[in-house]
Image (cartoon, rainbow, N blue to C red; front, side, top):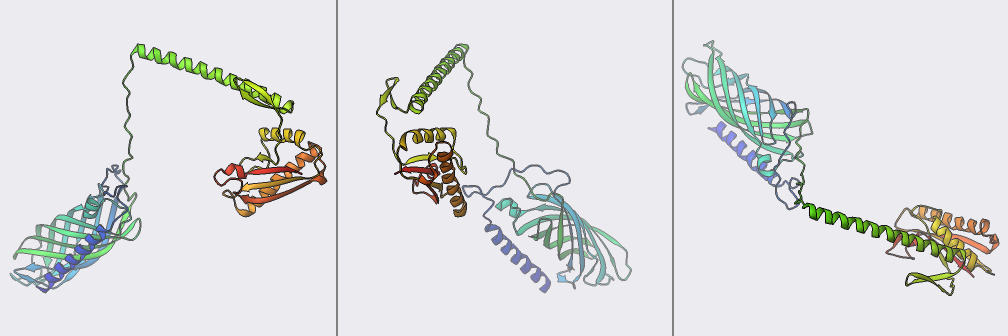
Length: 390
């Protein structure tokens, strides 16, 4: 009974550790923590095939006793049809060492040709996970047992059924380590007998070896059809709104054009009131702020117009003009922002000298690098050059 106790202990240990490992899976769950079990896309014919090769020991349990251990070579080929269901064909054996009876020696050649129906318990219960280290796979076995005793007695062929527990350990995407514990039973020349085996080896996964879940498809919502009367009413309303929008755009363009001509060409400030621009007292504030686009060291046309207006109306008899460049501290490195702020300051200085005729000796230009002192919550206000007149 020592042999059968050893096998039972091994099976119980593997089962306990496997269930513990499966319970610790945590990346095959949805956002609510529920286990995801599919649905999975159907694999192609050549996907998810595998070949297993290994070795171990056989034994015989006959008439209430175990024989001595024999050598087992394990070779099989199979395919997974879903993450939980698969099948394989294989051969197991070389020799075995049973009990001597009925004129037969205990030693005999042993060849078990079998077909197994596999069920991946880990994927079925805990959800499919490609990177799981340990998969527990129980299976049912059907086969034919061919054996010949060493003393030359006739060859024997018996049909057997059994079960097994395959433990699959992931080594990589295409290579696994397996520990396979199995037993088959049938009626032999000496009566009813059980043939347990334990083998270990490598599994080679061929071709595509993982599984893809179906993409979530948002259902198409088909609106309730409108009547012809409702459709025509909506069409007329859309046309009226489009005309109103076009009129408003034309009015805005005309007002902007009028404002541009009065403010920037006549040097006068206006306010908009009751649909008209009313002349107000011209007030020039200093320092002026010129804003730059992200990463740019040149001004847009709009900001150039601001600088032109400021240059025409604010300098007068200025003795000193201080040009200070800055960049947004949240964009770019400190070194990059320092260089960018200096480029912006020197660019504005060059415009004042070359375009507006300001004496270069009156102008000082410097860059303060990245900053958020102009506005902590509005980044574009930190991409600025200020022009202060003294």
